[in-house]
Amino acid sequence: MTVSAWSQPRVAIVTGGGSGIGAAVSRRLAADGAAVAVLDLNDEWATATATAIEADGGSAIAITCDVADRTSIQSGVDETVQGLGRPTILINNAGITPFGRFLEISRESFDQVMAVNLRGTFEFCQVVIPHMIEEGWGRIVNISSSSAQTGNFGHTHYSASKAAVIGLTRSLAKEFGHKGITVNVVPPSFIETPSLHRAADDGQLGSGIDQHIPTTPVRRVGQPADIAAACAFLCRDDASYITGQVLGVNGGRVIV
Ligand code: NAP
Image (cartoon, rainbow, N blue to C red; front, side, top):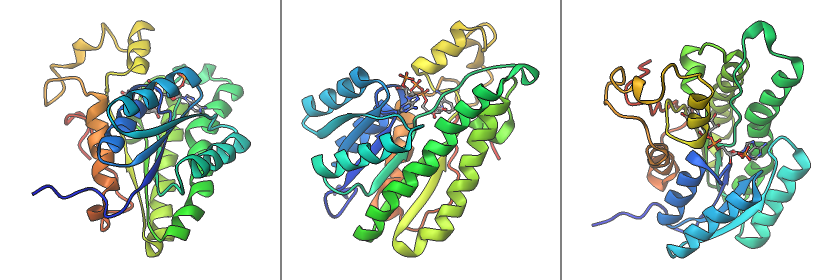
């Protein structure tokens, strides 16, 4: 017997849903039965994800949204409500991952990383949680990074932003658990996405992606579907007793 993920129709928002991890999470939630609003800075890619979901028989809309801009967040959520209904699942996935030596990171770069990775997550929660309270049910998964757990050379601003997302998640879990809202965090490590390939092309991964396979306990590179599976699990009805948790999806690269 298959147990469905939800006892009633659910609407999900996935930020950064046009590429990599966000696209995979969007497709997985849609396959599990949610109607998905695919939000991304990149209009073309958001549309490609939504079109692929519809082609597979799912329900999705694409919305252009900049998570660093509060007005854009508000209109993205409003469009979701109009197009699909109240969002009760939120995956805060959009992120930027610039590298830089600590002494050379500018205030502008620091502010941009914080605006997208941290403030975008914070403000998306502020705009969507009232809808979850109204429905008496909600699931939030914030995508952090293993860099928040271990630190990472050349990634001080990025690691700081992603560590803050863990603190944000734990605090939200305590504040909204009694409203039927769970808030968890998934810190990925080494997932094969356009962003990982960009880092490899920039020489940030030593001699390349495959070089890291022998030191990864499961002996493979992670795939976006690995993160999607974890997010889908945390968003199910029957994950209601799991909140404020950090679920590492990293092939055993980071065990804390
Ligand atoms: P990706 O392939 O670059 O996808 C990220 C998506 O987010 C892109 O479509 C990007 O659009 C979009 N985006 C960037 N800034 C945005 C903004 N201000 N508003 C809305 N959308 C925005 O990256 P990914 O590897 O899938 O990463 C997804 C998340 O996982 C990120 O938060 C990242 O930090 C985290 N993560 C990834 C890994 C990994 O190994 N891949 C490891 C740890 C953590 P543009 O391309 O147009 O900018």
